[in-house]
Image (cartoon, helix red, strand yellow):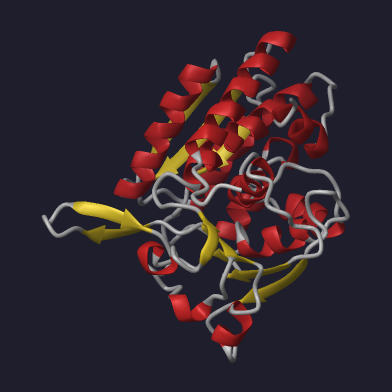
Length: 302
């Protein structure tokens, strides 16, 4: 097992497999990407998605809405994308303005086109262990562990963070009766008592709480695997913006068996998997239903 679990080699592999499948099936996948407002970090991510789509042969139609957009207007745009047979996937970029009900907006997306897994139907399928479109970040964690052959079955995985897009779905996916899952899972959060005691029991620790360098060496045991989902902007010594994760990388590096960097780790894989979800939805629209196991087998084929 490698010490540093870089995301870019895996992301490149996933993109190559996506191109193979697009060519094999003669697909023209199309995504409707909806952004509200002009949050700088969100705008950067949106432009990355648009440019990545072009390189993969996927069309990304960007709808940029003002920050004062109303709930009815947003839901109307989502409904139009749901009804368009040429639109295979819908992504609603977060954060949404305060006047928008996040849950209502997510529920408005057709579950078959919900490539960022915001609809409660898809989240419910994860809880039941049923195949669905999976949250890209949570799937990126599993794919990274699989790519670097980190044993998961029977291991104690501790997740710090209980969001509906990472912590909760990832915990349930790790519990699935799958060769790449079958873990024992503990989910921690800001109200967890004896947090350090819980994290020190982790064979694999996933930090997904959105606090810069929260995880310190005293919170982990020797030879644990550290998966950092966070990305936090932090000014560098030269005054320019830089990014760090939720794990203090430099401080924890020595104790870890393996660790993901930020940037260049899980985030690199997440964008590629968003397009894998788009491809899954495009295939399903043609009556070709591939499961997550089918895709994982295809990605990691020898």
